[in-house]
Image (tube, rainbow, N blue to C red; front, top):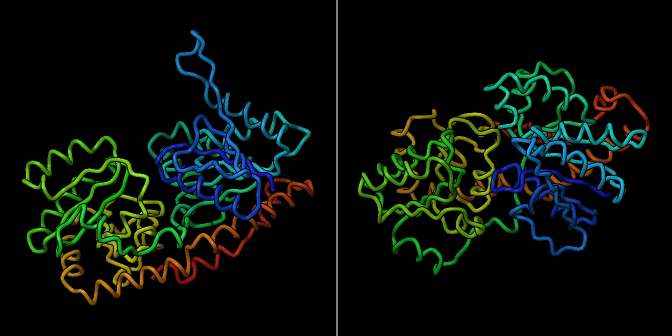
Length: 400
């Protein structure tokens, strides 16, 4: 298949997932065309099956802001024609699915099947600003298929948009060959002394991630367990977290690494992941940690209970309960047998349910069904009502 992919080319979860989907599909023999304003951060475009098409925006004095959504729609249509795309897969509803709808209209009578994948903040944005609801709902209804990365997100979308049309859950995934336990003592020794534990937090440092709580949790943990904390990522709350670490006298134990490309290497030597978010639509970093046999301490919110099994892969705690999160972390770190068992459980569950080798075929099958339905000239609602893939089986047993 010749597949166009549009995403935000940044460190955000939606861009990372979209890029990994493209890379995995290219490995399976498909021709992938990324259509966006910059090369995605995680994209290694050395494969002759991966192509990048830059969206260039017009700078004109009349426009206070460059009309990206219109430029993107034009580029989508152009690539679809000249590369003879079989399908366009857009990640993040705003504005990508809107642009895709415009591209479809421009291409008529040629049919360009469009799939929209929802990642979370594109939906919660509507919850915060209802003015986006009509255009976002329209763009999803005009998509030939809509997927969500978790059951939680599917139900949230249905509720927020009052949508009856089908939304298929295809979960996020991890490359289980890349994310696994490491015995790199040199890397571990770079951050911790012998006998010290390594705790890690990875995020975009936005308020919803509660990075100050990460520091608070670690402060309580390190009083009982010799440990270091790696803070990976960047964002608006970083300076507050740095100030808090300094105020608590933890400068020599908390390391702010900024954005990193070698996430798998860092998780491979870590002992515990802290994720005290207000909400997570899925919790990709939790899954990546689990694949590396790293137990997770996280909030019991959003899609996290579909990924982390409380008491088996780590612990889920009420958001904001810093004391309980810290005590759970100490329990794991001070009990080598429990730590080892949870790590193995986590790895086994990641391999059973979330490896890319299991999830990418679900996308391939979904693509074929959408292309087939559109090719038959079915109405959108009738076509999408047929789209049921094996991802539904993933939901059974995923939450305990």
